[in-house]
Length: 533
Image (cartoon, rainbow, N blue to C red):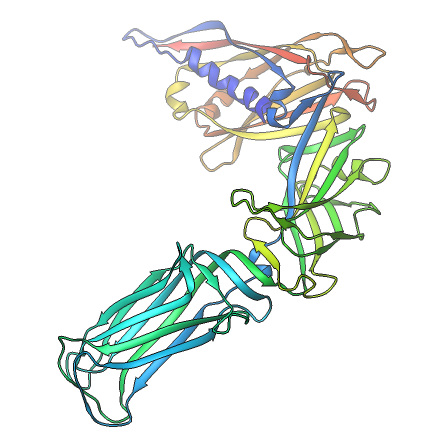
């Protein structure tokens, strides 16, 4: 949080201005140094990231943030496991085989895919074909491997190679081959062209033309081929996806309130827009069983209550293909909007959650496993996604709402602060916000333990507010931060600083809006004793 970092970094500014040292052979003495260190103006963007802020026509600031709650995993819809094919060849006779003779040629159809979705066509994002060839004979063997249904740039898969002879009779020679299948288009109709999850390959083996004569021994193997399709991940599939139900009980982290450690926040209003996007070419039915705001710091949980979203069955039509490879899918959407009138959204957010726990059921093709006639489809980057868009006008009241953040200190504090003894930092705050504030700096040693704390001796006063709820008078405060000699000793060993700031709105629990012209002007002045040697 930028405001907390600003508070923490004032000490670093103190270092930058006052860290010069004087050395002399004369005896040491102390001098007092009074110097302004930093002047800064902070607005609401220093409390909340610019990317989350919007201003309405009245100038009231709104916090808007989006969170992907749930997105389907492609593996949960289509998963193509590793497939291993083995060919072991022998001749049931002991005969000589001349060089250049074809000894094996066969077309094999095999299952490629899962027992769930029936795939007719696929495009691979990645995948490998690994081949392990063993030659038991004393002749070199040439092989040809073809997969007519695997096509890249209009060319079917075709590879040739040589497996050298075994070094001696009774021995064998093993050779490994790897082929990248990324980008290949797979026709999984098999030999007939009308099947699903079927791929065929053609393997041919012959003795090399320049090799020795092969002398086979009856029923002893001549060669063995193991082919493994592995790491197959599709970019696109088409076929019959079937009817399947996916259940997920999980949680999603929420960073918006991660720096808030304690306190009470009361909101005037909030809005949540939940959008379910269906990017798959199959109808979908989604049900959110529960969605809970979880504050891990307090242990408090607030389940969301909404008849239109929680426990409600959401039917989403299938998406369609555009024919445009750069934007291939026309997604379908289902949107629900919640506010304080149709849900308990306000207390749901006031719980200051750091995560959202949820339970979701998703059913594909709820009307039947094949109502498209085998034309269901999935693109890997267009799945079912549940998005949450939260919007909160910064109209609230807060009581001791405490933020905390950890910042790095100087790299060598012993050297930087070596000659400083004690003194006082004075923070002059000209506050245009309708809340008072106090802050504390916790010094951390090399073991990340708190060694000492520095705190102001008074509050930063809140600006005055008129009957319309708008600030009508700024307030100036002088906050002294004493630093004793003992605290200075710890400061010289500090590695990091925890900055803690606590805010309470004026006239609490009156709800006050934060406008885009509000700010606070800060000036830090140091009055320190400096030892000159």
